[in-house]
Image (cartoon, rainbow, N blue to C red; front, top):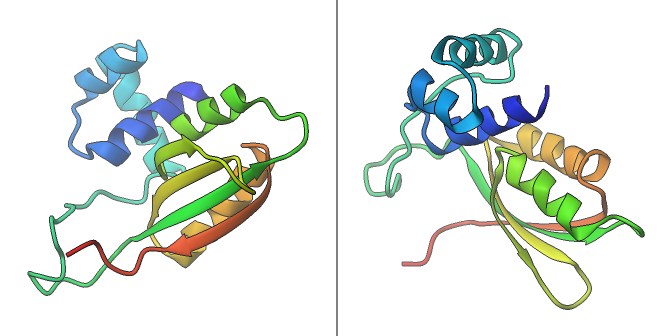
Length: 144
């Protein structure tokens, strides 16, 4: 998986109905090349499917199929902040990343498909993103 694949995943995580031509324009590929990349990501099991995201699943009595969490990140010694932000911006699970004060360096807001996906994300942020430590809080419900 390269940076273009990560950009494509970011686009599809935001808009699962994005056209191949739109994806290609954003990442600098032809429509056919973008379609080929998406199909490869699907066949490799990176993209497992597409779904509708509802405004408030509780109101329409639909079971929750994703987890939103807040992850405090402390970078390893010597890890460049800009490198970390570039990594976070390319990871499809990351919805927002902010630099913060206190014991941690960054606060990430993420959305994952379940606890196994959360575990994969936490491993990824340490192995690829440069995190030396983290603390995770799972969002139980939105503000009323």
